[in-house]
Length: 325
Image (cartoon, rainbow, N blue to C red; front, side, top):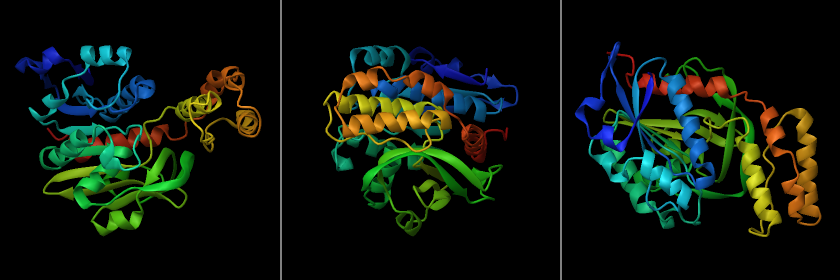
C-alpha cells in the first residue's frame, strides 16, 4: 500500500510505522482547514495527488484540522472518528506537511478565529519539518508570520483556469511544460515583488493571476507556497460557483457571484453565462439555481491540469528525498 491513513490508535502504536521494501515509510501530515462543504472533497483531492506523486513509495498520512474552524455536527463526527487531535502534530514531526487553505472570514488575516494555531503551526514547521506545502490562505499566513507581508484584497475574485509560465530546470518544475494551466480561486493576493524581496523563488507565474508557486529554503527546511489550486477536480470551480450563486439568490449574501473563467466545456459555457446574466440582471430567483444542471456541467468539465498536478506533487515529494533509501 502506497498511502496509509493513520488513525488515533495507530498513531500511538510504535509498530504502526512499518518498513517499505525500498526504504522506510515517510510520514505526511495533512491539516485540512476547509469549511464543511469542501472538507471531504479537499481531503480526497490531496490524498489522490499524494498517492500518485509518491510513485509507489510508502507514505503514512496523518490528518488534522484546526479547532477554530467552524464545524457542523456531521463533519465534527467525522473528524472525531478519522482525524488526530491537532496538538498531536507536535509530538512527532512529519517528513512532509500540507496545510490547506480555508474560507477567509475576516478582512485582516490575524483576526481569523484559528489565527493563533495557524501562526504557531507554520512557525514550528519552518524549524521542524523538512518540507512544508502551504495553500492559499495558509501561504498568505506564512508570509505574514515569517516576513511581515500582508495580503492584499483584490477588486474582484480571481477564479477560473488560467495559463501559467513555468521556470523550467527547478526541482519543483522538473518534467513540466513551459506553459501550463492551473485553477485559481481567491479574494486575496501578495505581489510577486514582495516574495522575491524576502528570498522566495517564484517557479510558476501568470501575468493575469500573479504567482502560483514559490519556494524558499532555510537551514535545510523548505517552504513551498501555492496560491493556485492544482489539487482541484475538474468540477471544483463549477461547484464553488453553484454555492456562491445559491447564496446570492437566497439573499444570504449581497455580492453577486463571479463566474470562473474556463470552468466548463465549450458547449456548457454559454449556459453558465446565461445563468449568470439572469441572476445578476433579473430576479434573484432561487429556482434558476436549483433547476440548473450543475452536476451534468461539472461532469463534462475538462481537466487539463491533472498531469501537471501529479508531476508537481511527485517533484515535491522527491525533492526532499522520498526515494533515497
